[in-house]
Length: 271
Image 1 (cartoon, rainbow, N blue to C red):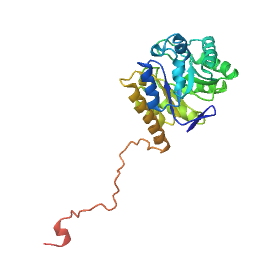
Image 2 (image 1 turned 90 degrees about the vertical axis):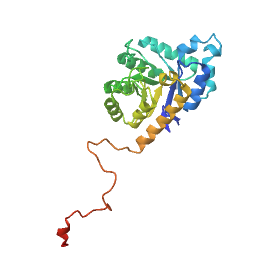
Image 3 (image 1 turned 45 degrees about the vertical axis):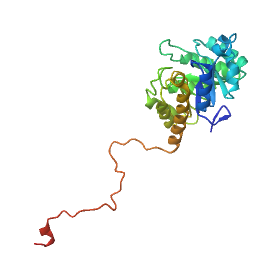
Image 4 (image 1 turned 180 degrees about the vertical axis):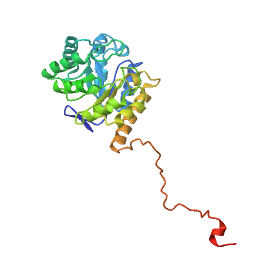
């Protein structure tokens, strides 16, 4: 169990809902993942509003039927004004004051514009939003986001959709140490369940992913694998795993080991 903005959750997996082969596969992936939160895009809802369910319409109705908490995002926004407006529209459409705040600054890497991110977070927090900021692992930016009113931080481990996994584990470890009392969710760049386990073993509170599941050959099975991997990583972290060592350490004690007397027979007085 862990808490985000006074809401207690049992699952540490946050799952995105974009780019699945079909609504049916999305539903099955959500069910098998055990996800506690689903991220949704306002753009997806508006784009499908006039279609039928098989073509993406009534998207939010399908999501609501799954009974999982919704976290709208501002995906695709490139300015403070665009992100703030999208967040306000999402609050009306999805009936929640939670928002995953994204303000993209670089077209190729989709790296967040951290300056605009902090400003948008300040504006939205002042208007009653509970902001989940998609950010880098920069410690100074993390401090500024907390000062802006955020109570959760969501650093990336690699560019969105890259599937590279944690490219800078040392930076993530430092981030966890610097913000020891803040809920931290790794967001973006996860490609395999082993990546999710690795960041959970560093002490992060949860993992948000999308493409690693929706782009898999069997999204539902991959969703289940991620749910299990995240749980395993958390259990391992709490179990206080061994730190790496430079030298070998024998696992078998020497006490009780058989010892052979290899001295020459003459030494014992025998002819």
